[in-house]
Image (cartoon, rainbow, N blue to C red; front, side, top):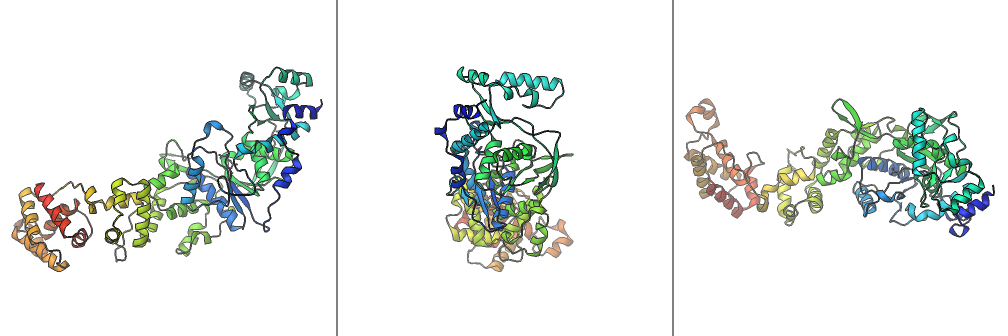
Length: 546
Ligand code: GLU
C-alpha cells in the first residue's frame, strides 16, 4: 500500500508543517539539571475537586522546589464537558490556595497554545507521520460495529477493545480504504499497536515505586472523526512539546499508562517520568471510598471558600495528606512558611489518602487563633465580600468598631484566646449580634416576665456609659438586690431557697436582653462597644417585648 499517498489523502500537507518545525519551535527548556517541568492538565468542566488541589500542590511544589516550571494545560478535547468560565475558576480557586502557575492557559508562555483545541495542527502532523510509517490507520467502524464486537467479546469472556482479530479495519486493503473514503464514510484514526499483552515489564513509578506494566495491544483511537485528538494522543504530543519532565497525575490514569508508553515510543519521543498519586478517600460508615463529587460537598474546592476556611489551613492540611513527614516538620517549625518544607515525591502515599475533616478543622482552628485583629478583619471581610449576605458585607464598613468586636469575641491579645473557630462563616455569624440589622433576638429568659421586666427597667434607668467595669457591676448588684436576688454568692449557695435567684441570674437577663444570647464574652465590654445609645435601645426593645 502506498502509505504516503494514504497519509496525504487523510491529512493534506497544507494542514501541517514538517515535523522538524515543531521540534525547533518547542526546544528543550533551558533549565538547571534536576529542574522538573510539571503541569496540571484539567478538563474545563468548571468543577474543582479537592483532588485537583491535591495534585496541583504536589506538582507545584516539585517544580518550584527544583527550580523548574509548573504550567497549566487545558484539556478541552471533549466539547461536551466544556463549561464557560471554567479556566477562570481553575486559576482563581488554585490561586486562592496559593498555587500559581508559571505559564499556561490564559497566561503567557513559550510552549503554547495551552488549550488543546488550538493545537490541532501538531496532532495532525504527527498522526500523518504515523500513517506514513504504517503505525496508524483509518477505521470506518460504526458504533454498531463496535457494539457487536463488544457483545462477542462479552459472550466469549474476552478482553474488550479494538485489538487483534477484532481490529476489523486494521487490514483493510487500499481499495477498500479509498472506496470508503469516496463513499464519504466517517472514520477515526487508530494506532496500529505493536504491543503484546503477554509481555510484562517493570516500570518505575515516581510515587508507587516499581510496578508491573503489561504492554498495550489496543488499537486506540488517536484522532476522532472530527479530527480532534483523544486524550491519550494529545497527552503524548503535548507533554513532549511542552517538555514536561514529570507527569504527576491521579492514579485513575494508571490503567492508561501502557497506551501512553506505546504512544511515546511510536512517536519517537522520550518518555517522561510518571507518578500516579493515590485518590483522596473518606470513611463512610463501615467502608472506605473515594471522595465523591456527587455525594460529598467537601469534595468541591468551592465548599472551603464558601465556608470560609482559611487558605493556609486547607493548604497545610493538604500537605499533611501529601507528605508523610510534613506534620513532624510542622510541629518542629510551627512558624516557618510552608514553602520551606522540603517536599519529597518519595514520601507521597502509595495507597489512598484518608480525608479527615476533623483534622482539617483542628488545623483551621489553630490558623484562626494565630491571626492578629487586623488579619482577622481582612480575612473575614474578604470572605463576606465573596460569600456573605449584604448585611454581613456591611459589618466591615466601620473598621474600628469591627476590630473591637473581634478583639473581644476572639480574645485577641488576651489570656483566653478562643481556639474554637473553624471558618469565617462561623465567626461572622457569631458576631452578628453586634449589628442591628442582624440582631434578631430570641429572648429565652429563665425567669418570669415580671421579674425580668423589673430588672431590665431598673438597670436601664441606672445605666451610665461612663461607668467603669466595677461601677457597672455595682449597679447590676443593686438592681438584683432590689428584686430580692442574692448578691453574696456564699449566702446564696448556703440557702438558695431564700432567694428568687442571684446576681449572675440578673446579669444573664441583661445579657440576653442586650445580645439575644445567654453566653457571650464580658457584658460590660460588649456594652462599651455597642455604645450608650445602642445599649439603651436594646434594653428598651427587650422590655417592650415582654
Ligand atoms: N485531562 C486529564 C484530567 O482531566 C489529565 C490527566 C493528566 O494529568 O494527564 O484528569
